[in-house]
Image (tube, rainbow, N blue to C red; front, top):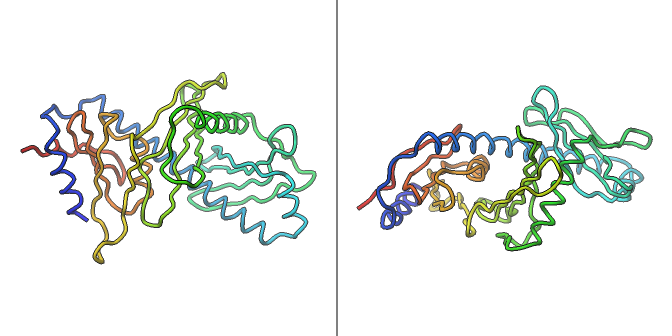
Length: 278
C-alpha cells in the first residue's frame, strides 16, 4: 500500500546526503537494466510455458514413452532464440556421452506454438549454442558451491541462461526460488558471466541481504506501490526489472549512494526524484 512506500522513504531520509540527480551514465545503465530484465522475463516465461506443456505431454503419452523420458536421465532445459522473436525450449538428458534433446517446444507471443517429445530415430543432437548455454549453467551452479553465495530459501534455486551478448559473453543467473504466493524474493540472486573460452569471466551478487517483496493484500487492499533500497549500484539493476515484471504492483527503488528514487516499470526505469530529506 502507499503507506509502505512513504514509510520507507521517511526512514531512508535520515541517512542520505543531498547529491546531484543521476547523470547520463546512470540513466543509460538503467535503460540497459530494463532491457536485460525484459529479456530475462521472456526467457523465464518461455521455460515456464514449455515446462507446463512438457508435463502435460508426459501425462498424456503412453507409459512406454514416459518411461523413456525417465530413462534418458532428464537433466534440465535450455532456451534459445528462434526466428521471428520466438524462443525454443529444449529439455535435455545426459544418458549419452553428451547432453541430448528429450523434448523441444517453440514459444511465441507467450504461448506454446508447437513441439513435443523427440521420438526414437529423430534428431536429438543439440545445437552448438545450446551446448554452450548448458555448459554455462553447469559452471554457474558449480561456482555457487564456492565462496559466499547464500540463497533466500531452502528450495533448489532456479537457473536462467541468456544467449551471448555483443561481447560473446553468456550470462547465467542462479535465482532464489519463490516459495510463498504473493511474495517475491528480491535478494539471493547471482549472475555468472562466461566468456567465449568457456571460462568464468566474472560474477556478481545483486543484494547483500534477502528482501522479500510482499504484494499480498493487506486490510483487503492491494499494494499500490512497493519500495526497497539498493546499496550496490547508482541505478536499479536487471534484477529489479525482473522482479517488477513478476509482480502486479508498482516498484520504487531508492539507490542509497546517490540518494535517487527510481520507478521500475511498467515499461522502463525512470528517475523520479531525490530521496526526501529533513
